[in-house]
Length: 208
Length: 208
Image (tube, rainbow over all chains, first blue to last red; front, side, top):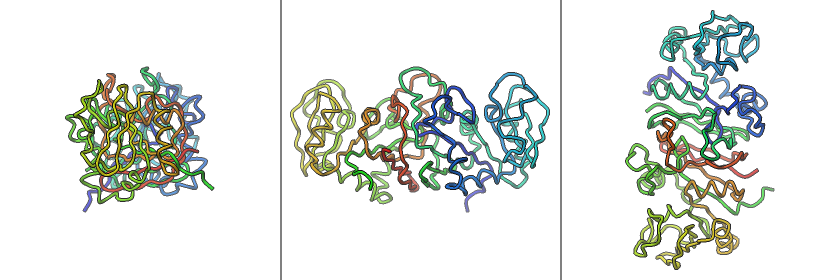
């Protein structure tokens, strides 16, 4: 029998592996590169991928990097309440990795953002405790998922590959974006499934 | 009706997009990194991917980069007759990109290697003429396919993704390998199909 999947990770990436460009934000992850609608499959084309979207939202607790909550990296402007509107889709505790403490932020519909200043291990531990028997989902971005891959804590990795190459790795200059698998040592996974829609390719892998 | 597919490209890559490591050769594309059997799906596990392998071998002419024929980049040692044995699987003309002229090399079974010193456009033109109504296949490696993607000449791109991350993009040092989509400007493709076996994920894309 396969071991239970307790920690999942979902991320939208380009064909060349970028989860975000140099000017990171969720709405326009590649800044001016409107040619790369990385997240169209979740929004405009959500009808094509109902199961994959439901798979993200069935977790009982989430961990996310700060960029997934806020465009800034400095101390908090407490009037900023996240990218997700007053009723975020998570409907569960969300543990946001940050260097700056902030009190928990309770939103409408069951989502509460908790701000974790002592690292990924601590965030995962708190998320596992909050999830009980349910799944913990690492919600991105690439930097956070890379750290979790390197730490070996992801049971199931789900890539949602947009059919675009970002053009960020042109020339020898640093790309400035966030690329999946950067700084992850050699790692073998097990392919579980692959499915294409006209706007995205969903790939699921498990830990061996 | 879709336009006909006249130029295809196949390449095996790691999850992080590498077609070869720093010490490039076909048999051990990642040098000492035996954890990354990039081409197992074509050899030891060929029974899992008969249609994908047949798809590569149905072309009527091929274009390949020099590393796909030889481990060296200098002038030719004429005793070297390629990685592919005396009866290569291509059974068609193969146009090898090189900086060093060499007479054509006729092998057993229908394969003749032609050595092209005036670039990708010339090699493609010669391959199209040789293929007649048939398909021209760009057989790799990543550097050659990147040049063809940047030139917009590939009708169908078929990725064969081994379930390994290479660990080559750790730290800020140059990776030294060949990475698909490096130096390719922003590019949109159309997902056609996706299929997983236990050892590889086959992804097919077309030009819009």
